[in-house]
Image (cartoon, rainbow over all chains, first blue to last red; front, top):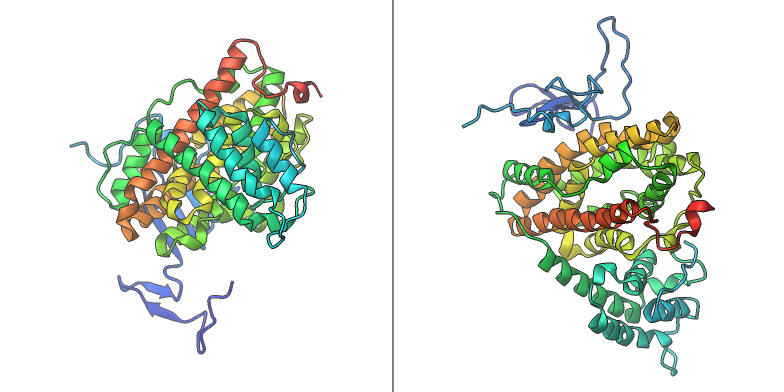
Length: 92
Length: 347
């Protein structure tokens, strides 16, 4: 669906976002969301490549990257952080 | 969907009604007017609604009018007031049973972080016997086919009941629901739709992948599991519950599907058969995060009065699927079939 129904809308127009970074009209081009006790969710326009620049297998737009080290699908998350009780926040 | 075989007086009456003409303005009272009365009588007599073969099939058929329809039934029946009246009676009975069966945890603060953490805790608790461990380690060839038959009732329309919720959500919760559902529907590639991957698994083990093909072969509790999400999805007032239900499904999926994939490979099936399960390991590790924070958390932040409904929906999903798992594993542990009719497995 087009996000450009309004008169004068320009898909390439960039505006300053709240943090002063460059944003297009739909928000930041990429975001990495750090989920407590879980993976890093990467959303937007990006490539996942190996050290030689070759594209890695990717079967969805938004991906979850393992950060507990226990995934059997690295670099992607497979939910294993729950099995190992992975914690990103200091215990109170 | 093909017409199912009736399982008692109420489903028999409904199927007779559906194959007749839909006349709301005739002088002759339509047979449909008798349906609500028959439902009332049956509800007064049933001891366990979730396991009642006749009533669960009746409710399943009433919901099916909103999905694929039923062969031979006019499309006008979908919004026939007599049928809707009967459906409401069944839904209220089901909701009442669930409210007495479900124990809600202590509710968290109505924030996105609180809701996500609370849902992960609720769905991470030990739910009793594990279907995924059984399938991974010991299911026989025949049992793994039964497993797919049981699962096919919902999975051949995977994601559809939750999609009903989209117009009832706004903002962050709506965007999250659409992001998850777009992935469920293959991100634009029909052969990557989860329902299509599941159909491929069915064909791979020699089963018929036609929508509704095995409805006559599954017990009431399997229909009840599907009816649960249709009820939550089709009633706007239950939008909190359908969101909680989806979060619950996503949060209990990745690890279980890894086990299911292992079970199919143990029995010698190839990657095409296991693809559905492999896909869910990775997809639902993404979805569970979005579902907890942005979908359920976003909904509660926008409509804090829905907090308890979200947790009710999540807990009801766990309870009904625990009943279904217990039914299937009890049968298998007794060397029996878990199906309503054993004919399909040897077909």
